[in-house]
Length: 168
Image (cartoon, rainbow, N blue to C red; front, top):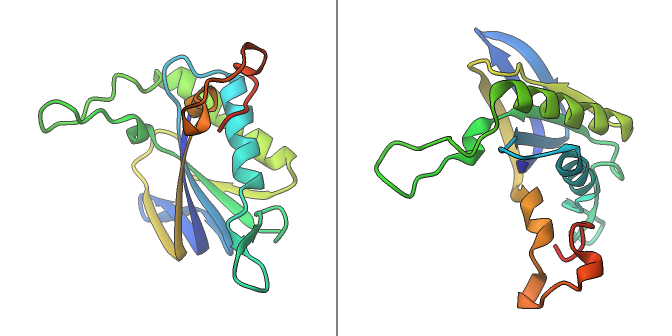
C-alpha cells in the first residue's frame, strides 16, 4: 500500500459538488492499494501514519503525531499512486489492485484508523472527487508498505527481521 500524507490545517473532499468529508487540523491521507497488498500492509501503513511525528513541539521541531495533537484524518482512495510512467506519456496502472480488492483493503485501513481513536472522514471509493486542502508547512510525506522490507543505509536485514516491519 502507498500513502501520500499531507499535514493540513483543514481539508475536504466533494463528489458532484456535494461535500462528503471534511476535517480541521490533521492529516490528509491519499491511500492507494497495490496488487498483492494484504492486511499486514494496511496495519503497517496505519501504524506509520498515526505515529508519524510531523507536528511541531514548542521549539518548532517535528515531535508530535496526529494522535498526540488529537488531530483528524481525511482518507481518500487514490489508485493513481500506483502510476507507472516509465514508458510513453500515458501512465499505466497495472500495479494497482483490482477495484474489489482495493476497496476491501481501503475500508480495512479506514477501520484501523478509527480503532486508533481518531476522527476519520473519507472520500467516496472509486468516485471522481475534488479535494480542497491547505497544506500546513507544507509537509508532505510518501509512505510505501513495501519499503518495510528494504534495509536503511544499504545494510541487509538479519533473516529474523525480514517481514516484521523493521528497517524502514
